[in-house]
Image (cartoon, rainbow, N blue to C red; front, side, top):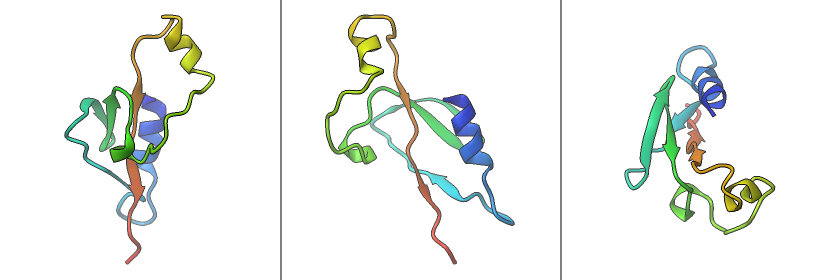
Length: 80
């Protein structure tokens, strides 16, 4: 997750970064990397995750092998 946050934060085209972090006060910010907030928890509809779906990785959480989840909420900056 840190590597992805760093990549998003460093993407730029002659000046400002291409993406902006979308603040989510209802979620815990675990850390900020290159201006990108890495949140702890499970994203919901307020973060653009509109549906409940299971993934391959959900199996690890169901069986207790992994206990913490992290996510990033970012959007492309408007073109000027």
